[in-house]
Length: 371
Image 1 (cartoon, rainbow, N blue to C red):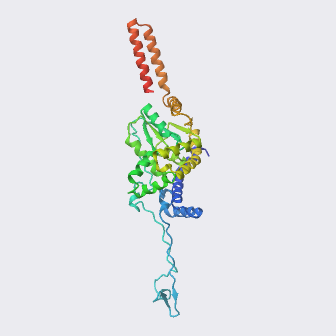
Image 2: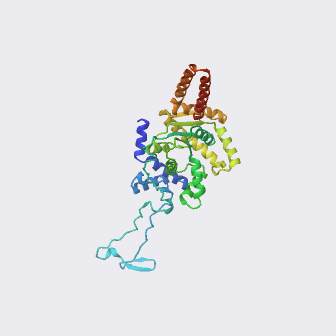
Image 3: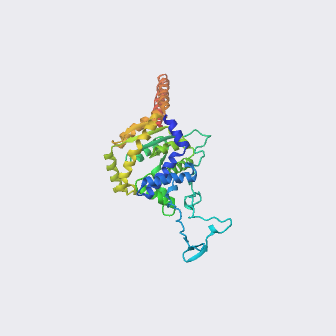
């Protein structure tokens, strides 16, 4: 089974969504016996009708248990005693009566309207066109790397250089938390997850990313900072939106990452830069980055950049890669323009030649700016 077969198998059976929901519930409840909790989750999935009926918060509600049986005290006179009151024993009375030894268990039910604060998407994958089909699809570049690897800095530089839109997944989520965490239960729970160094639910991340694309129709391209952060996000993005044109991995040592995060915590005080969250984020990144890198490397989309260097040195390498992968014809066109200009100038009178040289300089300047 190759990578595409595996992706199709997992996606078709909603396995990434199921695992995300179970892990979210596990992180939220933190049970003493995680195996028993996961077994109960799988049993609930069967009762709900399968993985397609599961949303990110399905296993965050308190566990429902069967009501305890009602103990009946029998008397020899054909009556039963409940508390201090005696009733006829219906099992001895003719007629269409049915007696239970105990009440049947209450079956778990699921409704997308069960919580008014969480009806925004509630497990339903919304399918719609993110980009205008009548326009060419904009370029999409993912910039991934460990926390503190400089993704935000390099993303802003690329966006400025090529006129692309900069989209920071982490910044989007932090802004949503700032505005909604105090009044919206969904974002309140997500705030706790992020503050603990965990990843936000995939469903929420993908939906927020879609909305950013929709708001900026007509953009030449998008630089997405900090996405994907787990392999299931890569699968879902490709299924619902499409494949990126380039994935840039900023490779940085753990020591360097930790030093940068500690400095940022002292300077900016971000909620996900506390000591516990830093350890958790580094651990999560180390665990998740290998399958993501392998997936995009197999598709010839991944480029690794040494991010232990100065910002300008890193950007010089990135700029060369973007030009080579996304704009390979620009340099050839510039060479043709320069050759034509030199040819015309070589056959022109002195005054006209001076004008041509000036024009050539201007053209070269424009090419440099546009690159």
